[in-house]
Amino acid sequence: MAKKQVPLRLSPKLYEEIAAWAEDDFRSVNGQIEFLLTECVRQRKKTGKYGPGPSVKDDNPGSRDD
Image 1 (cartoon, helix red, strand yellow):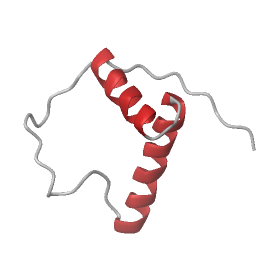
Image 2 (cartoon, helix red, strand yellow):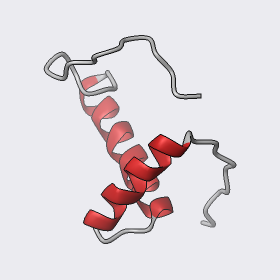
Image 3 (cartoon, helix red, strand yellow):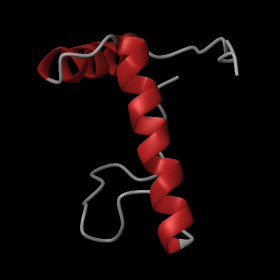
């Protein structure tokens, strides 16, 4: 099965964070995004929820980096 191409807009700050993380994990940015999305879907299937859960503190809930 061929992979689907999806246009994606990210803030420069988010892109840089993902790029640094990808480098740490020896992945491309695209590969890192695919890995993260796969993990989120797997977690949602496992728990019926998505997201990091209550143990992660969000300093600014409801904010967006658009």
